[in-house]
Length: 84
Image (cartoon, rainbow, N blue to C red; front, side, top):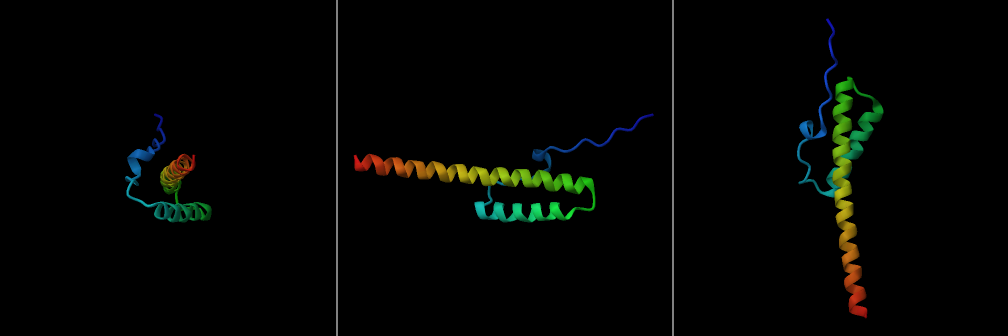
């Protein structure tokens, strides 16, 4: 009889919706998660949960940064069009 290891959960199953977090909230929590991962955790499962949360938070930060870049690009384009 063989036993199999538990299957890791996916980020979408274990990480709540982060769409309501501001950039600063997501960044601050990501810093906390990274710090906790660096210190080591009690169990492998907890480390995996932290990793998944960190990946989701990093994705949320990236969404904000991409949006900010798009807004800056649009403002520059409007400014350039007005100057011409």
